Length: 307
Ligand SMILES: NC(=O)c1ccc[n+]([C@@H]2O[C@H](COP(=O)([O-])OP(=O)(O)OC[C@H]3O[C@@H](n4cnc5c(N)ncnc54)[C@H](OP(=O)(O)O)[C@@H]3O)[C@@H](O)[C@H]2O)c1
Image 1 (cartoon, rainbow, N blue to C red):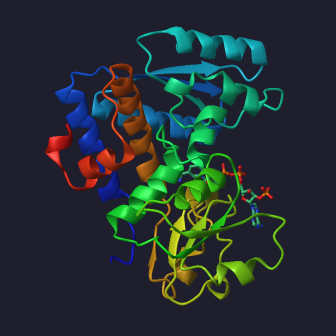
Image 2 (spheres, rainbow, N blue to C red):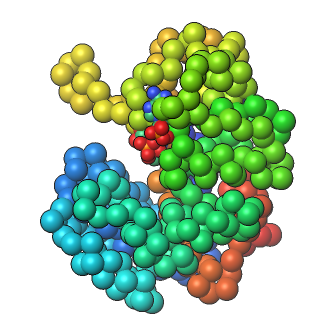
């Protein structure tokens, strides 16, 4: 296994599958991407989503809304996209202004167009191990491990972070009775006592905390595999803004068996999964649904019989 688990080759394989499916079924995938306010990190992410979509042949309709918009107005815009037959997927970029309730927004998106699987119905399916949308970041972690041949079955995976978008759905997927999962999972959070007691037991450590360079070598065991989901703004030595993960990469590099870089790791794969979900939503609307196992065969084994 490579020491540095780059997201690039994984993203390339997912993108190739998207393009093949779009061409084969003459799809015209269209996403509505909603951004409330002008948070700089969101603007950067939204722009990279649009650029990636263009390269794949997907149309992304960006709606930038004022941070003063009322909750009802936002819900009405989501509802319009829910009912537009040309729109296959909807993504509402976080964070929201305080007066907008995240749970209301998540529940307002049509579950059939819910690209990040945040609707309670889609989260419930994950819990029950039913087929549906895979949430983008957890799926990116899963695909990364699959690509690099990282066995999860029987392994102790420790996840730092319990958010509904990363930690909790990822933990549930890793508990699935499937060969790409079957792990023993521990989730830690900000109220966990003696965090290092758990992290030093991890065969695989997944961090999704939003705390720059938090994990240090004393917190990991020798030869652990690290997947760093965190993306944190930092000021670089040249005064420019850069990004770093939740793990102190330079300090942990030698002790770890393998580690994802930030940037260029899980984040890179996440955008590709978003478009895979959009393509999947298109296929579903034409009763051409493909299962997770079929996607794995398409992406990683280039198995053309599945098309
Ligand atoms: N790579 C990608 O594609 C991608 C996608 C989404 C997010 N992200 C990044 O991943 C990170 C997490 O995102 P998120 O949306 O899950 O964040 P979030 O909703 O803020 O959740 C952060 C989690 O980390 C836990 N935490 C915070 N400080 C901790 C500490 N000192 N010790 C242990 N746990 C601690 C929190 O615990 P409590 O629950 O107790 O507060 C919470 O569960 C961010 O850096 C974000 O930018 C990356």
